[in-house]
Length: 182
Image (tube, rainbow, N blue to C red):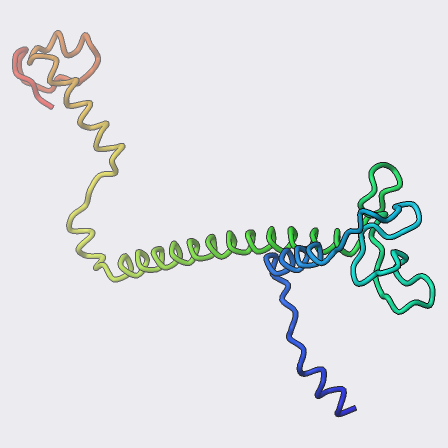
């Protein structure tokens, strides 16, 4: 058992990054051999390994190979290498997951930044002295704008009681007909 554990420690760990999987698939494809002189119906045209007899060791011969001729045939008789397709699909899936994880991390960073900014604003507001705020009251912008608008309308009455009352824009509060009071 110790001997097996020692030997197993010599193997490198597998890398499942999309680039590594794609490189491994390319390495497999580059190791495939072709024998164009072979008859595709009964002999190995595309194979992995060694085949001096074009039979891929179907008998008790020394040559060892895997026949992939059916994989490269055209038409309905074409077969697929299922593990190859699954690894290619896994590489694509891992790449997509990695991309989505990066998007999530970017959004989490933005949320953290906004949270810190909100905390800073809350802290700065909580340290303001309430008496200072009450000492300098300000009208809300909508109310201030409405008051300014009313003053403008009243100033258009041209200090005349008849004009002011007929427009209905302001109330005449003067003692005589020519003095405007607001």
